[in-house]
Length: 235
RNA sequence: CAGGAUUGUCAGCGC
Image (cartoon, rainbow, N blue to C red):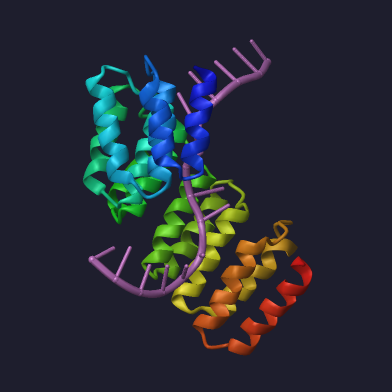
């Protein structure tokens, strides 16, 4: 069974959803891991509706979801920005007694945020026993999408007040916020602090965000310079 | 102690 699940997972990750399903379909008995692997593949490749339908089928076959299953479902919900489906999954998570799980909490915050429901995202966020970097980053990303750079900066600040250290992904979210709001100086300053104050080596995502920021504010020469520099250092 | 599914990560466009 372990090997078959790994096979389903491999096809799913590669986007071979039909192949994944064919393997799955031939299993005489499908356990929660096989189901989760299949659902994960569908969720990951933009087939959120199918993923949720598979979950329904899983329940009809009386297979109990576990923590990982819920993570996969939340990914499906956010991929189709379905806030109401997220609420339904949320209710089941509570029923199963997983409400205080930090991993699921993070995923719920992220799912609500991606669905555009920041109120629910914050409600879950505040209900968690402790908040970690992932939940903060999800919220920052959501504020960034709404072009609310002030809230992004504020979150970045609060997070550190709470004793958490931002990581590379956090900075991607912050830089994305600067870009969307056209805040060049702030973006440059955060980019500098990335290495100088936080000791994090910038990755391609950070450089991409900077190129994007330069482009957004009309600094095309700087954007091109950065791209050329990147082309040199990456190859 | 190990283990087959495991949450936050660029931009734009279309629906």
